Image 1 (cartoon, protein in one colour):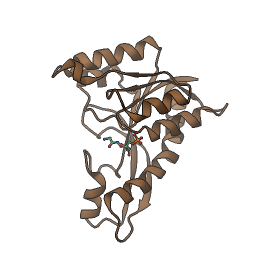
Image 2 (tube, rainbow, N blue to C red):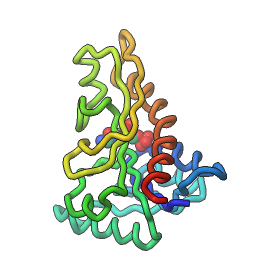
Image 3 (cartoon, protein in one colour):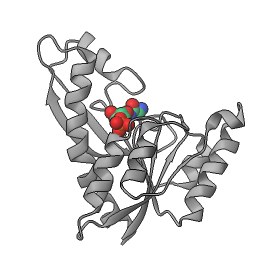
Image 4 (cartoon, rainbow, N blue to C red):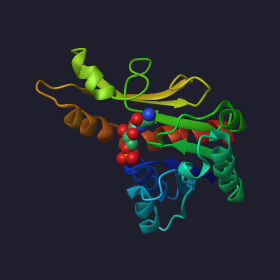
Length: 192
Ligand code: GAR
């Protein structure tokens, strides 16, 4: 099985869906590491509960030196022979250095129908624009933020009276279904 690390900053619900899918015998990947830049990210405990090694590499310890932080992250990945990195709510902009190290082997999930709404506050922006549809996108990570080749998308309706939180919840349910499928396809295509 392809050795996957999941990088998180927060609640880690997408990480849990990836890890649970990996428990199936025919899943082509296994989650060997969950790594967070936030020491007390709730997702780290969820990873431990699933029996997955969880580590934090706090960016604060490195001050403004983003590459030094990423070198520490990269070292953790290398130590576990990670083959593919899945970003799942990892709220750091990556430097070109890390992106190049993982070129073609790193994917990200973003809570909008890219190319619409790269960056933050995607749900509030979709509602403000009067969109009737929202969703999530999985893409290969390239140097431009939220810009790499799209490998999966799922759509959900925007309902009358939706708040950003309500829409975020609906999008997350779609994310949890989409990410394991698309990551499986990706590792089959890129690692065999
Ligand atoms: C997800 O909705 C993901 O798409 C988004 O953060 C959430 C993480 O939730 N990612 C980004 O906004 C990346 N810019 P989770 O920690 O519960 O999986």
